[in-house]
Length: 348
Image: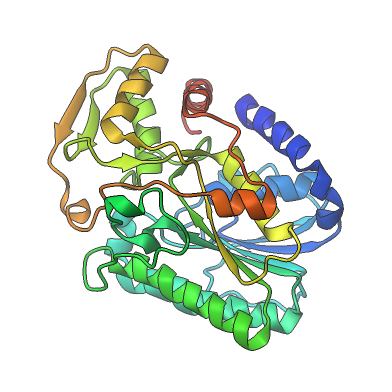
């Protein structure tokens, strides 16, 4: 395991030590557990002695992310799609992270994207109901907000969204919105203890360089290009904004959201509220890596041309108030860690 990841996991374990008794010995089902965020979540679970069932069909995740957990008595990897997965095991917690999440892929597989988000979520909610779980965490997205107007930036959870239900991104955006509606309905009908997180452009080690139309992945690609001295490519005018959250802040937020008592049936923004243009991001990466890369602006590819939000920034005050969420890692520090990790191990 890369030493940057080891250091970050050690820091996470320290910051989450007050939750250890709620994790040790508990049975967790993690869908998408070999993916970027899922594998980090499994690592923390393992360090606190949880029993983990990781379900992933490796369509976008990687066994490499969890290979160090393979063979452990408390880690059970199931290579399966979510819709095909069946288990008689009774779980204490279900963490639903499985999804097709990058525009090139969800535009290539629109029906599958809808099925995973809608039918897959309902299937897991039925499992949660049958198992009488202590908690169900659904990984939603800031994309449910669509393209907010300037007066809704930073964006609160109460903003209902401006989303195109009949466009090239609708299968992902509306799939997540429908899944949230299922969570809401199961909570109010069956008292299923759901909690929802809307994530905002998470980055860090293990995020793949390929499929980079999500800006978190674009950040990783920018770092890769800067390290290799090749031109950094920005699609569009570079004035679009995003707010980037380092992976350890995201994972800490997810654990506190799931395990804090008294917040069932709630939705929370989890991210970093520092807004930056994509051009400024590229310039910052060039400076931090001391790169000779130039920055080029190119026309957007077709899959990213329509409905791409111009601004994205979360209001995280609700998460701060309800479970003490506050990002610890600033952008420059996070970028340095990603660059160091990438230099040590190209396939981070």
